[in-house]
Image 1 (tube, helix red, strand yellow):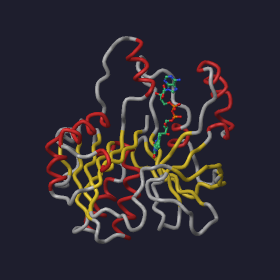
Image 2 (cartoon, protein in one colour; image 1 turned 180 degrees about the horizontal axis):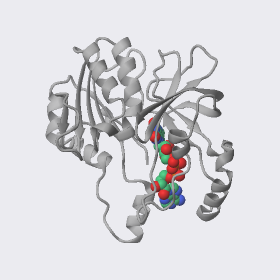
Image 3 (spheres, protein in one colour; image 1 turned 180 degrees about the vertical axis):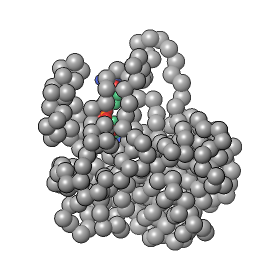
Length: 281
Ligand SMILES: Cc1cc2nc3c(=O)[nH]c(=O)nc-3n(C[C@H](O)[C@H](O)[C@H](O)COP(=O)(O)OP(=O)(O)OC[C@H]3O[C@@H](n4cnc5c(N)ncnc54)[C@H](O)[C@@H]3O)c2cc1C
């Protein structure tokens, strides 16, 4: 379904991350928490010459980019949260195309076409709601989990949720303060631990914010405290481009957040059927 939306609000979540609140003209949109929409970069006139150049050097058409719903289906607005990708000389092959303009150069009133809604990273259908969920997220991987968390807390009071959320610094932590507020609002249904990997000690003094990475022991303990949880994992993974490069240069790939987390879950003995995953690469 293609929709014309208007940007009704622009909320800066972190120095490189912005939530775009989208006005659709409809009171209710039919999607599930965890679904994503897509945005075709060809619609942005300012990107025209840039797209022509990239399509020329890559030898293929630039595809629509996917963005998870940051809003939940019981909210009266649509929202996405976009983190600006960076060009890192010597590491990234091309400068990123769409995320810089969505995250840093989109003003209220801007109209755009979006196509939605789809994706398998959602809550099971009504009647099959799990008794508990463990969310494990890193960086912008929080976005679909944020939607599932909000929707679950308000609509499934019997469901217990735990979030383990990793970022480089507290200021990179998307929805940090809002998550803390949510935990205070739903103390019996929600437990959150924030992990900060590159700031010692973490800038936030909140007890839920700790230094270090999400490791196997932390995941194991969180699972022990839940009743056979469904596990949702979302965050950076090695991309097809990373894999291709490693193969060409005969080098082995270091595991990123997704590979490490799935490895821990397998060692802990969590059946694959209990795990949902989404990576943004
Ligand atoms: C299901 C899903 C949901 C997502 N949800 C979100 C979300 O909620 N928020 C969010 O911020 N992002 C999300 N993403 C990521 C998003 O879709 C984009 O990938 C991201 O915004 C980067 O897009 P870009 O156009 O800026 O960068 P791109 O132009 O796509 O570039 C990204 C990287 O890929 C490299 N690259 C591109 N083409 C090639 C090539 N041919 N060879 C080698 N390297 C190449 C570039 O060098 C760069 O490092 C999601 C992705 C998926 C799949």
